[in-house]
Image 1 (cartoon, rainbow over the protein chains, first blue to last red):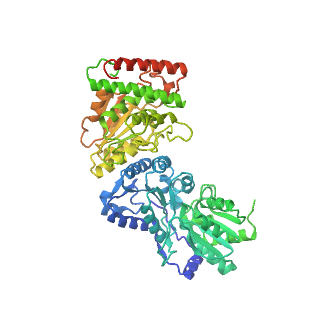
Image 2 (cartoon, each protein chain N blue to C red):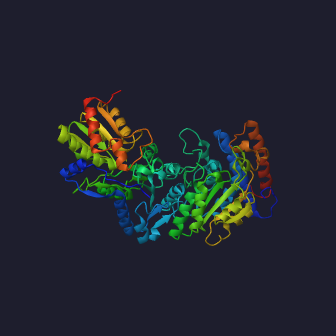
Image 3 (cartoon, rainbow over the protein chains, first blue to last red):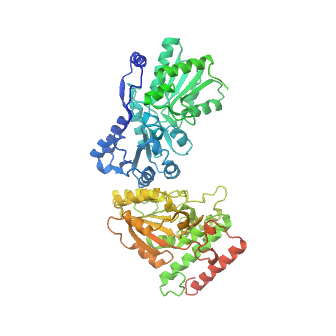
Length: 338
Length: 288
């Protein structure tokens, strides 16, 4: 079961979204499941492997429609990844789907050895990622997965921000013969790419141009960064860039450098600030010789406060209001620089 | 038993001679590299000999054919035995084994797909059975008619992932999957029964829905039968091969320290003397 999920957005944030013309989409997980079913109906060699997770992954419909293309291994995540690797070696297009918290911790050695090191092109799908499980607590949060997988060679890491990025990510995963990790949450998200169909795998996407603060965000935090940019423009007259970074690896280094044309950069992620997008950005900026005000927004090095995903986001400042405040502090120098 | 040098079966004698030559080669490359898993290599080499010379439909020519049989060495630390047999089967020149564990060599101290003939990168224990289960399931789905073998250690069976895979293999009725346990009863810290008793393995595999065969893991004819007899319909097969760690070198047999012991010069000389005596004895029967 899942904890209740109150709105991710305050009334003020919803008003900003309305001003920006954003419309509410669906949970990425639903779009993932729908996209995968459509692809599997076209390609009988596509298999889904689940660990008693078909319902959580919104794949019950898939199981009904294409029972021969769904392999169930039960509550056994290590075996899930090992079997998926064996099936991939047997020339199947394999999506191994399990809650991100279990998939990337309990099965980490299988991911490292059987998928990445052996180069078996499994598509690992971490569902209900980050703090999607909310008040179910830290056993069910995956705030380590980007850091863990960034430290493993030969696996792409993709965190879609909305329904369009989800469709693009599934398509890109199918078109590459490499291991991929896809990370999905389950909150309904605003559509960020209305009218846009082109996506280049591995690239970041600039959602808003600006000159003073750059928000470099990934996954379900991107919407909040976009709203914060609008809030800062309206209330403070601060001009902000916003980047969506669906591809954590490969990282779009040029986009990160472009973000540094502003006076300050704030990375935003639903992940512990250790080892995720923020540290990846910091490395790019330092190695590029950038001296710039920089702040990592995300979950600090602690077990999270109890609450829904939106409670946790707000508590740690991953919200329109919280991110706007962090930008003000960074521009004013309130945040210690040493 | 391979020590029965006066076997009347020529094919058996030839295979027995191969085992001795493989043993010599394992010791040579471990001594040259200054590292390796001597005891386990010597315990599993008869199994590998039978697999590659009698059972597996795998050659350098068909290695990319999806219909080939698969051999996944889950107990990856005994890589020297695998490399020696693959060289003998022509997957790469035997001379390349002199680079084992050397700087920039592809011959890593655990199986790697960089080496022709190696199916999966292994070495961390408890991975091979899941991989083999997935590959066997793929073979079933595509009706390839192939078989998938994996080699496990009895110490390795303490890894819980094996039993996850054992459940799945039975659930999916993978009678094209054969898990061989190199049951040498020793692991790095001592007797398996003292470290973490995995017995009774026959009852455990049977309870998980497997067909179980117990065999002398140094009896080439018995191994050949156990690995070629038809599977029990709808069940994966566990072949419990009773072996002796360090088999073939008297002072290495059944001694835990040879798990990854490298012989010193005197030990190396004495080991080769024993092996060469066996080879001479067998060669005298007509197998040069």
